[in-house]
Length: 206
Image 1 (cartoon, rainbow, N blue to C red):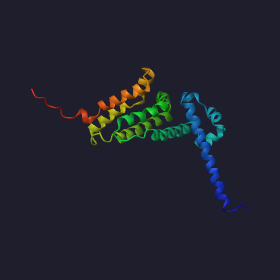
Image 2 (cartoon, rainbow, N blue to C red; image 1 turned 180 degrees about the vertical axis):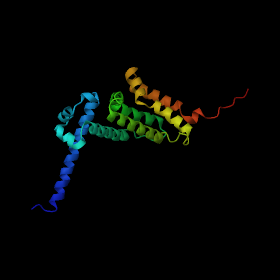
Image 3 (cartoon, rainbow, N blue to C red; image 1 turned 90 degrees about the vertical axis):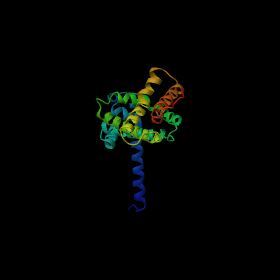
Image 4 (cartoon, rainbow, N blue to C red; image 1 turned 90 degrees about the horizontal axis):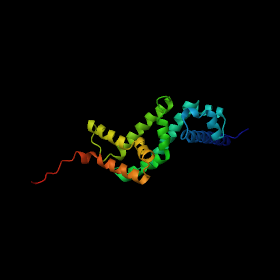
């Protein structure tokens, strides 16, 4: 008869193995979806990439839709780690954002292009927008106005200035180096600082 001490150990090992399998599947799906359209990736493709069966994926995630939600959660977690930057340090903020976009930017653009027809991607995109806005409120807390219309306006400006499509424009469409693109973002963020735009104009003597 199995001892009471042995049983929890086996249960813990089983749970760890299941979690490892789940992580492997999510990472495999993320790798495939970073370079292929959602519809072009099948559960069999993910199973082959992860070294598991399709039934294992279904058991863990219920299907492709649930797997996409798990991938979105993984990317959100990685993004939160990558984007850590001191409040008010524009250079560090831009650098952190570019580190994230250089890794996930192309995949973000690919996923965003599909959100009108894939509900899982639409959910992921909406969640990502909310997280990005919360991040902006954190890293630009020193410059944002008090809650109200002025704050919302400022947040909208900062959201546009840090959007992944602006990164795509500079890095992919215009072919700027990362250094030049980061420089452009720093200049843009400096130019929309509400403290500077609404500062009283200096009077000059005649």
